[in-house]
Image (cartoon, rainbow, N blue to C red; front, side, top):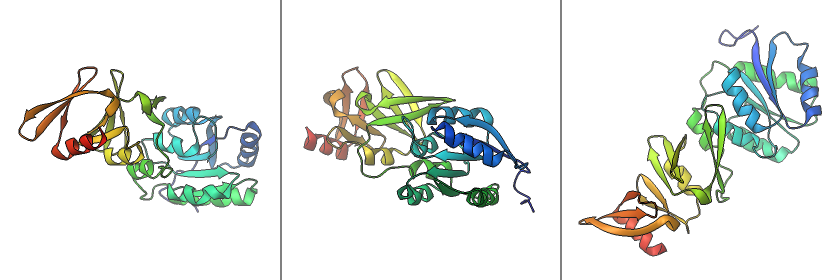
Length: 251
């Protein structure tokens, strides 16, 4: 019996960079009247666009893909959507559940194992789940220093090298990335971003700002215990007392 909160027919997107793997999944799913494959994607960039265009109920998502992996795809989805991860390496299984995956399929898998995962997914749809903020933040791969930032703009994805960032600015539960005169917004807390940055180059100068010290031109006294950082492009950022202390330690 179908759950009353679940759609009668699941709109599903297949994402795998290997064409034979997508063909196998299509074959396993084509005789199921409760499944509609609304898109097939060969990479993560296509997946982000397909989710925006198709509004699916479920993702079957490969983890290891070039350019944009499965976890990075989730980081860019600004809506809650159940996901079944597909992987050839069981070391990714625990990580998959850390990012609230419904289930994971370890290649090669059987039709019965796929059916089991789809049944679990149907039970998840319509039920309370983690917020998209939790989902985005839980994709943090650990202690590895951030080298690039992925930002979604509609169905497009912008890849910003960290080296190109001038400063980060907090905006409620989002962070604004200022780079080369352009600003882009990402669903992430500033504190979470700070954890991944190179502490020798990026300094939290204020509760709302993280500065790339290579962009710093000078610091001016604004008022008692209050300073302004002036960047090489003329931008001015407030510097708190604790932020100034951190700057002095680094410089």
